[in-house]
Structure formats: structure tokens, C-alpha cells
Image 1: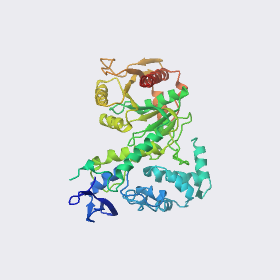
Image 2 (image 1 turned 45 degrees about the horizontal axis):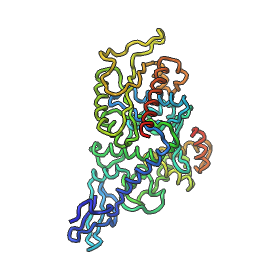
Image 3 (image 1 turned 90 degrees about the horizontal axis):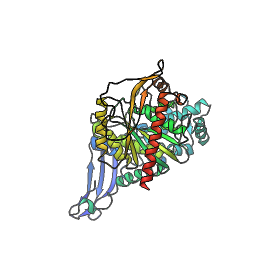
Image 4 (image 1 turned 120 degrees about the horizontal axis):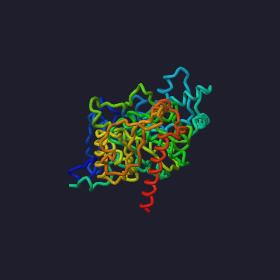
Length: 152
Length: 295
């Protein structure tokens, strides 16, 4: 979808994406020629269809880990769509377990390579693997041990 | 006034670029795979998953590097058949490691992640209209899996497809013309009719249909050591206008082992084992002829 400023015959540029409210996103576009602004307000179905493509709206910002956090684990279905909104994945996943397992930054960076949808389940499994071996921290050694254990 | 195609880019949403990047990641992830083979049917319950795994095993015995992607996200069965229901998805320095069976077949299956008592569910705010977005979400997930896992250097990557003639075509569109298809039927007119529709639908696209396998073609009676009829079919030639790669009888022992995730390798010297061997040979002959003719 593209937006055109009719008086200027100029393509409009994305300015901002507001946090979602009741299944709707507010995406503001502006004309670079005259400065006129307009907002695209999506309904829940339109929002869901875009989300189903597995894409984000707007330029990427922040760290790789925060940009690829799971919408499911954060509790916000839009967090994967808006750069910088995804956060709190680790805390959410860890709080479900009686004995919290920490993740080193390097291990978290590796975990970010797991597809978003399956990431929470992968995290839980790896933490269980670590706990069974008496570890309270998942680091790259634990990840390598898991690969070896499962013959990968 | 400018039209859509007069405007370069998408104004900053980055959606078009991200879709292109997704396709590039998939192509990169599959660059080391020699043959892509989708095992489908259109009909459900004909033994696609069982056949996929045991054909993969037969190819593995020949020393080929083989992996399976269980593309039936809603009804995954490869994790159980392959005995990897407890496998973890472990991220490496570059990509995610692929769980492997004891004989070295890489297997991705949602069954490794989601217990059988639970259904695959995607979070959504659009309640009651999942038919408008569900397939898109599943194919996006397939793309993520293809791009994220270590497929490495493979001779054959097999896709175990879900049932549905329309889904078969959707997978052909998504996986691209590199992917060849093997269709599975049982010797009943109902099943052949559905498979014929899949053949007709696939014939409109660029994907090669290598042929079909007639599964449950009789059953193996261990007491008699003989193949006995299972279906009463008037025409064993099927009427399908594609090559027949072989017939595989039903063996209750095979079904038992699949349920328990026990390898079938020691049953190679049975009628079913020999039938699977022949189908595997036909499959590789067809794939190699495709490779030769494209050179």
C-alpha cells in the first residue's frame, strides 16, 4: 500500500506508528512537499493480515534481540510489528518457572535466531535442559552441550 | 496523477523490502540442498507422513544426506514417527540446529514443540475470521523455518505436506519451481479421484510431478507371509496420468513402529521394506533424470 498526496502528486512518507489500541494501529504518513499529514487507522482484520505476513511496520531500531522478540511471549500481538515495542520476553518466560534461569547476552543473541513463533517453546526447553544439569544460567556452553546431547 | 507503479518504495513501511528479505533468507538456507521433494496427495489418511519418513530412511541407508520438514503444522506427525518428540530447537552461532534421528535424518516437526493434546494456535485480535489470515500466517512461519534452520548440505529435503488439493498447490507456489512432487494415494476410486484433482492443479504450474505411490496396496500377512488384498479396486492402473513410482503394502508392524517412533531399518528384508527400497530407487532415478535434463 502506498499513499499519494494528490495536490502535490508526491508519495507520502511514513512518520510514525502509534502503539495499538483495541486491535487498531495508527500509522501516520506525511507529504514531504507540503507537510500535510494523514493517519491510516486499521481495523483488527487488516492489522492481523499484515501481521500474518511476518513483517514489521516502519524502519528497524534498537538491538537485534529487541526487534525479533516474540509477540506471543510479550503478551502484545503487535509487538513484532512495531520496532522497539517488543520487550520483556525473558522476564515473562522465566517468571513461569520456580527457579529462574538467567541467559547471558550471547545466549540471548543466539536465541533471537529462533523463529519468533517457536522461540518461547525453545527457550523453555533449553532452560529445562540447563536446570536438569544444575545450571542456573544459559550460556553458549549450555547451548553447545544441548546440541551435542541431541546429536545435532 | 501518479499511479502505484510510478512510485518507488513503499513510503517507509519497509514491508516490500522485508518480504524480499524473507525470500532471500529462504533461498540462502536452501542453497546447499540438491533436491526438494514435496510428498502430498490432496487426500488425507493415505499415509503421506509414514511414507515420507520411510522413504527418507531408505535414502539414508543408501548414504544420502536427507532431512524432512513436517509442513503439516496443524497435524504434525513426523516428531512421533521419527522418535524426536523431546527434541530441542537449539540456536547455534549462525542458525538453529536441526534435530536428528539416530540414523542421521534431520527432522523439523511442530510435534517436537507442541504436545499432542494441544492445537497450534496463533495469537490474534481478529476473532472469528481466521480464514482470512490463517494460511498467510502459516506460510510466513514456513518461510521463517526455512530461513532459520541449518539445512546445510543435503541430497534431498522432503516436505511432508498437509492434506487438501488446494494446499498442495499453495505449497507448490510457495516453494517454487525447484520443488518436485510425489503424490500418494491408496487403491480406492475416492482417493484416486482426489489425487487426480491435485495432478490437474499442479499441471498448471511449473513444478514437476515425479509420479505417485500407491500406498496400502494390499496388506502383508505375517502368518501367511503373503500380500493379501485390502481394497477392492476395479483398475489397478489407477487412471492417474503420471508415472507410478511403486506400490507399498500395509504392514501392521510398520504402523506399530511408527506409533512408537521405532526405526524400521531392521525390517528392510520384508515385502514392505523391499517395496520402499524400490520406490526410493524410482524416486532417485526420477530426480537424477530431472537434474540431467536441466543441464
